Image 1 (cartoon, rainbow, N blue to C red):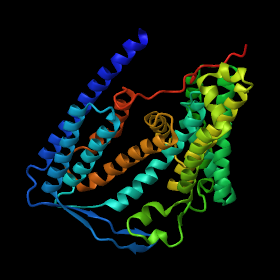
Image 2 (tube, one colour; image 1 turned 90 degrees about the horizontal axis):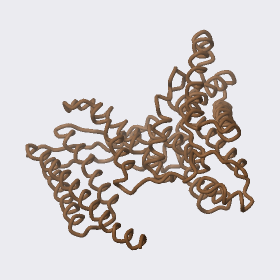
Image 3 (cartoon, rainbow, N blue to C red; image 1 turned 30 degrees about the vertical axis):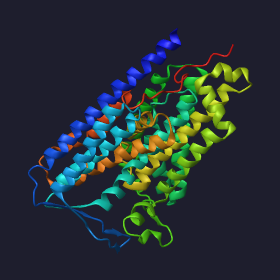
Image 4 (cartoon, one colour; image 1 turned 45 degrees about the vertical axis):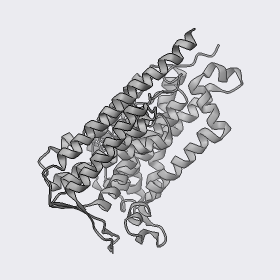
Length: 421
């Protein structure tokens, strides 16, 4: 009887979600129509030419009639909304996602009316800004897939950023600086693992300790060492972009994909590797099993504690790499609080992506895109506070967490210490 009741309830839930999703799409369509209402005769110009490594990569500008473009987008989104309501399709996330993309692109068209925006530069900037968030999200995935909550990624990033700068400056070797940052993150991960797994400290408390410890130590040592000995805060350079063969000269695509920092390429490799590792290998199955049902895994002979220790150490290594990217890959120096909350954004991207590597990277790209568009739109001076525009990715995350676009589900044993019987 319970199964029958559940089966009858599911269509009602889907119907309600479809109705809400369709209504949201219709509201977005109305907003697009309103944005295009008084823009007759105006055009929006998106520059696609870019400057990379002192070379101009020419591409024709994308010139769009503002009102027609907005009306077309509004019409297409309205069709999506009506179809969603009438059909009751359960592909809610797809329809809402398409409508949201149309709204973002429509807003960019409206904001650039009578002006020009370098779209290629904006996309390059989005990838750069998304990278530390994506590293942090991956760090969270490795830890939480094994059943250990890790909110201390921010502390791991700070320690990784600090140690990487010290090592790179002292040795004048960027590679050794990267290794130093990874090892610093692993040390923080080991501390978290010992507290959470061996001593069964509340994992939220343990993560908070990492954040306070990372912020406190790096701030103290910055004033004690870096402010006094500036040579310890002067690496030979930032990590340079790698130009992939001749493909980096391809208009638009080349600067975005084939002319990025080596750490960005490393991120893409780790993303693919993580996807294969977790879902195509025995080791990944064991990690997921200790995160979902550790008692059953233990019964099958899997060492739950060892799997969790290894996973948290990997999490720390990637967290340290995230901090290394911020200091050696972007800033070229260390300043207090240089991670600027990106560890927390990484956790949000992880949840947004439902603890999946690909989904987490999409979440990171969303944060990176809106971080970039705040800067670009402030230059256009559209009359809207850029801080309000920056709220968009957080609103999207709250929608996901509320369960509207397909409920996010954390590993069943995440945050639960394992007691071996």
